[in-house]
Image 1 (cartoon, rainbow, N blue to C red):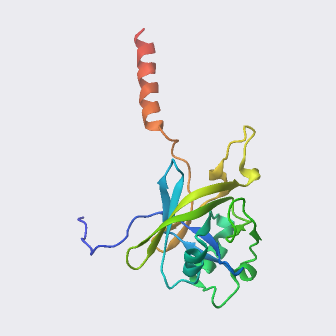
Image 2: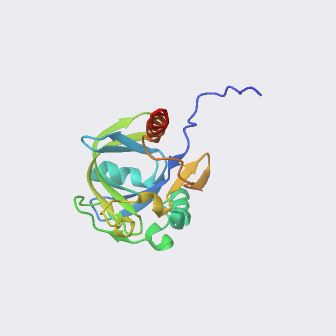
Image 3: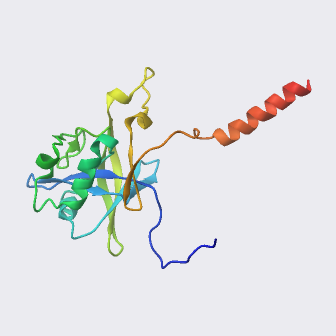
Length: 200
């Protein structure tokens, strides 16, 4: 079978489904769910989120210049969906979801979500008004990792958290591991070593 050609659109899936916590200078806070997020740079550590200007949290981010990216898990799937379809103008998402705000290390206005396995504190460096969404480019100020996902060597085993993904309108749990970074090269090298040993 062939492939259909569609009009231009976003079909880059799967994506991380994250909850972004925000706050304004008056003490109001909110949670919104976004899938348009990702890494920009390693050094300095930078990330981005893209938000529609009509979203309740949009002006909070513009005003305070900060937000927190909170990773989500299977157990947070309901809350993640709720915070994406309900507006903070109408409901208190903290109360409705049972999530708990927590003070961060570096930010003044945006709280962390206590239940998230990882919280990434971000300060906005630039806003790109691109169309339907505005992109907030931000520098990462601090990362919080839940100690229950640290192993005996104090390394984060994040994939054991049951991370949540978003793919074409559906929430998905991360599947089985197929390999680790660089495994394609390591397998070839191991095969060559094995072949050399047989030839000796």
